Image 1 (cartoon, rainbow, N blue to C red):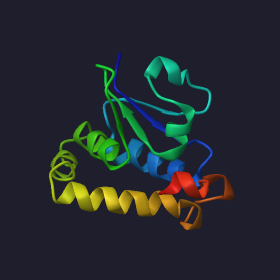
Image 2: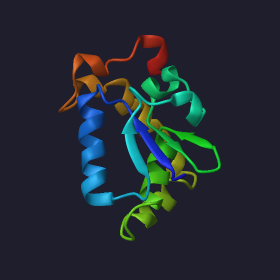
Image 3: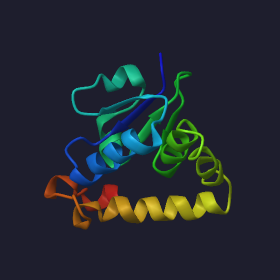
Length: 125
């Protein structure tokens, strides 16, 4: 089994980001929207998958949000790997987490975002 990058396929902003990653970063992983996937087999819930991008490692460990983005970068082409390493080290990891939460909260307002991207207020925090 390969690592898997799971994202919200109903979100235009998320889909645009994933297409960029597929073209430029090229992480060594299966990339799929969470809709229609057997999430239980991956060890995640639909609620979590709708809340943040997820990186499911071969060993079953699940990374979410900025940590998932950093993992995807580390698994990508060599030029992207240093950024993935930097995003996993404090204090940059703290900044990455804060930035990810901010983007996730307002993704429906960003280019490519749609009403389907909007999270219920309690899940967006």
